[in-house]
Image (cartoon, rainbow, N blue to C red):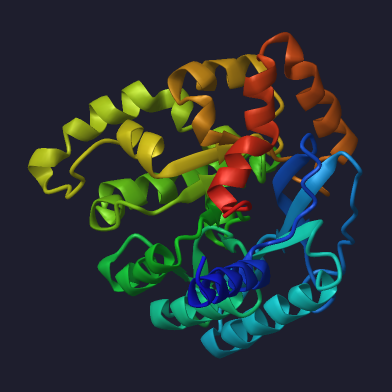
Length: 331
């Protein structure tokens, strides 16, 4: 082997050593994606913990985080601050902890720029948005990300090849009062979260976001916020909207198989998981817990008990394999 070629191989090895992620790959530990964290300026500190059974915990700002800040300048500055603080907090434990960026979604170009910084400079895995961005002096403007003005953001997501996690949030007033004033027990995870976030996700589909950006990777928690349980009805009814100008080229089922992933966060229903395995496929399902709103031991006991309904290979893929692939941990 000639010396120039030896030097080239050495340089390649050196570059890979610099840029390849080093993580706690035990070969068996789980990888969890929707674990909340925040700062005192927002809600009071939620501490994060590490369990020996977890190879990596991906932390993200607790809902509503930046989506709950109506002033664009304040939201943008807070997003940068939150990302910097989180990067600092995990800087000595990046083999055990990763992060999803927090973003102000008031302006698509600014969101794209902060995402680029968070991924390329801070080493974050992607971004988590807490549903729509509230805006306006009276919090009466809701910004959804399924309109053409957000294409610059989705282009950046595509270029970086990172996932975007959509997480629920409490509705702003007067929407919350109008919808749930008659039955306030429905506020939050029992009904409100799935009802609101599923509309945003299906809006991405019907407004052609996945047609314009076919390589997007979107994650939805809580076993898909009920959407995969209703594929047939959704697809059938949306067909009736095509003559009315709906720009969607495919159907929601297809986008879920191509562009969307779901996690088990806060929804440890074994029979529902089995149904989704048949309907969606385990390659689109990732294990997650929803800490601190769900206790980590609860998720651990549930997922370890799935050896009665999943093969060893299937269970390993749910616990870690799908996340390793999506987050490109071994790339």
